[in-house]
Length: 330
Ligand code: AMP
Ligand code: TRP
Image (cartoon, rainbow, N blue to C red; front, side, top):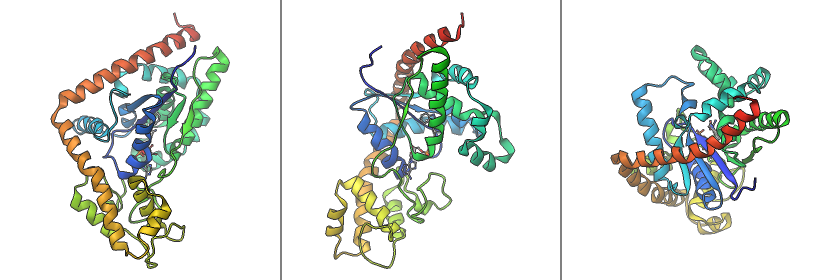
């Protein structure tokens, strides 16, 4: 079977709101890939059930996430945007793959260990089998590439192992996927602690830029951003705060590091920071407008996710017909 375009699959949980880190590290890459690949981007709502959710808030968060994807510029015609729970084959395949995944493998997952540590009162079986559902997400679409952050590397290795195990036992069934890591900007750091990743759930929200932050909040966070006493815009490891700000500048302006260094040679950090605030709000202000538009038009959102589920189901159906046959199900 000759495939025309290579397939990309990625997913994100509908929790919190998108950060500048998510945008630069993930969504910007996704947008670039939409030109050359068949892309499936799923809102993995079932994965979020491993943590207790309030149903009303959760429903709102799900729709808000889709609106944020659209506001960030993901084109629903070029990409298949859908909710995981709308394509039932994800859970069907997850069950089958769970019969090809060893307890020992799942016990070694660092994300499981971390989350079990954090939610001691709710160490449920879903938290444990989370990586199997993730493997099903990917294998269902015969994905060649999976663009994710480095933290998902272990889950992807497991997915590959399970796919190979199945293929060896039953013949070529699944494409064995590769991880896709973006170039620059793979790790945007907290503005307050530049050695720590900018993360949605950070206690110190001054270090985190949310795509939905109003302009004055962004300016304030930039003013407070940690730098150093060297007063030099130079790209080097001794100045992690400045380095992080330069990466943000470069990814949004398209300038090289030497262009940035030359431009700010005799300007202070104040000017540098306010220019970055300007670059960020150039991105976030239209984002906020588009987001508000989508949230006011639930019918448009519905069109997107219904159409996405239809397109995703077609592909999932082909894989599942093959898998059921391979397993000897009548
Ligand atoms: P998460 O926010 O952990 O659900 O991650 C969603 C996607 O955004 C993943 O592909 C992450 O690797 C990416 N991502 C999250 N935070 C950052 C960051 N600070 N810098 C770069 N990429 C990030
Ligand atoms: N586990 C991923 C995360 O925490 C989310 C995810 C679920 C995912 N299924 C996926 C990512 C499939 C890529 C492909 O970020």
